[in-house]
Length: 100
Image (cartoon, rainbow, N blue to C red; front, side, top):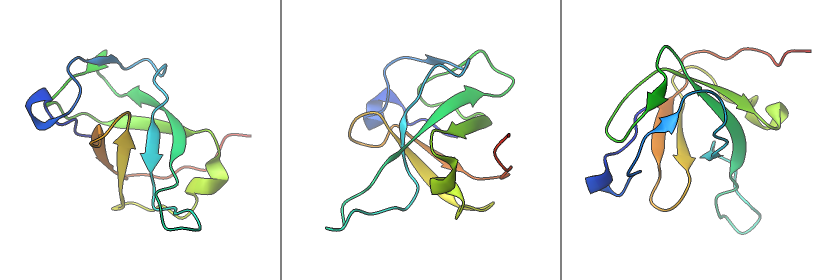
């Protein structure tokens, strides 16, 4: 995942990589009128305590509604939203089934 720098309209500060952040994600769904239909996923930063503006790291997502994410596959790109513009961009590198 890559966060744009503050000079690009992104975050002004780092966020903790401990899984507390639950941003909205554009994973390709649309409403009946064609608008973005965003989905929530908890976010962990792999191997780093935090992720800051202009930085890139591997992250792990835990979707609130896993069934909404089943269409994604490695190579797909999803966009994180906290405000406008987008707060981050991530490429899917692995998809695991939800834990029972």
